[in-house]
Image (tube, rainbow, N blue to C red):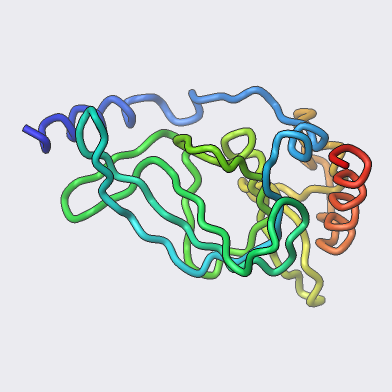
Length: 185
């Protein structure tokens, strides 16, 4: 029975055409004001787990980040975030466009502490990639791989679609810290 219900739930979740799920744009100011925790970190563990609820068992994925640079709301060496979905054996659950993680991923994270299907502010918008360019400089990209050229362009629909070079991580981090100091304190 559980496998049948899981298969039906999975079919419903995955029957939505790709790109059909949309979320209201979240600006840089929204990211800073809505996040309970902001940090730059690296994924060190990704682990699916079965969770019993009043409605039955569900699969969640626990993602552990090593915090390289705590920007707001944390002083911990590790931060753990849980997301709905994942696979355990032959049981899988998924939601369209849920972020996926791999060990070694480097991210800028804007997250909520409250338990939800996805703790990232703006569902995926508060999760940014950090990549190193050919010159050894860390750069900030959207989760989709588009370069972020200015934090204020986040959520405006033109998030760096025209940018040639992504913003340096050090500059982005400084902008986040200034915003936290100006908005949150």
